[in-house]
Length: 393
Length: 135
Image (cartoon, rainbow over all chains, first blue to last red; front, side, top):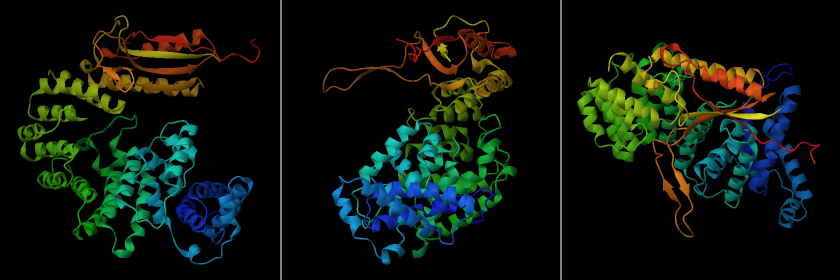
């Protein structure tokens, strides 16, 4: 940690310690909700102090000490909570509780199945990622008080849960993918944060030869992240995959993603994130959209569809079929897809244009624009309709 | 400072001078329009007058209570004849005149042929919070 007084202090390594520090407090008998608040306070103090003096040799020990002191202050000032007083009076001895790393347990707790996705995301960003409530509220464009309430309700929901109960990696991965997809509103880069947490999660399970599906999720995120600078223009307009400047894709991220994916697939326990990553890897590998191995893309979609039965996969598969076997085949595949699905009309428009029916395509693009889920997408689709009309459609 | 809502409609306002739907513009005209809108928002922030800006999808429905133990009644999609809000700015400005001036600028956003749309925008004052000296 190069934390001289004048340098900008990098708080990420500190935030990485947050779940482990919460774990220590909980092992000592603190309840999760109060422990989490105490650790947040300690983090804020650490960032302030270390920014001036540089980080101590043992930042985790520092955080534990300050957080525990803070926890005791809170509990002692709250005399009505007698049960906690009893816990506190039995001062901990430094023993196995200090050595055990409960980071994974905190991941599980924050993605607890009894939480709604929005609550699980918020709690994960606070107790696992160590972000402040203000930062999380800013990222999700809600008032800070709203986010504070969401987090404290979530903490209450999971507070009674034992640490030793085995958790569900599936729900953790889904929560991390939700964070990743939220993208980049506000001051916090949630995509980068999701990648950091997924790396941490993958490292935690590397002991048993790794978890292929967690690695698959990491690979998927890295492969998407590699294309990120080319997905929007400076004015915020969307750039479709076929038109992205592939020379600007981050080759280091692509390479890392592909390496992680290959080792995951080799373990022969395929899951949906590995399959999605395999498709993303084929795109990343192609010098142009036309040179993409669309036949193989369709094969991965077939496998993904067999595994998930997801209507969205079916829709994306129709696009790939259109590229591999022609627009008519794509439209036939689209006929199997629920027309009420978001982006159905946009895919239909694209396939009709490819098939040469420009009038139908223009009409469908305009309709898709009306149904678009974001202004950026609406503008993009309107522009497509405008382009076809300008060409005489 | 008083706050005003500058309200934009998909439909329901008097016809505009340059009344061509956006998908009948050229792609460059669409880009120019979006650039104008982005610049307008940025300028409001720079002058310290911006409070909020949101855009609404034309989708949705009317909803009402239908008695105890019954699910709410929905009525939608919206009839083609209905007034339909598209989005808004909330501005915090010195005067009504300034709010009108801003709405006028916004209404000059370029449309088909690169010419101003002359779109009708609604400007509505927020009720004020009683001041410390009101009694």
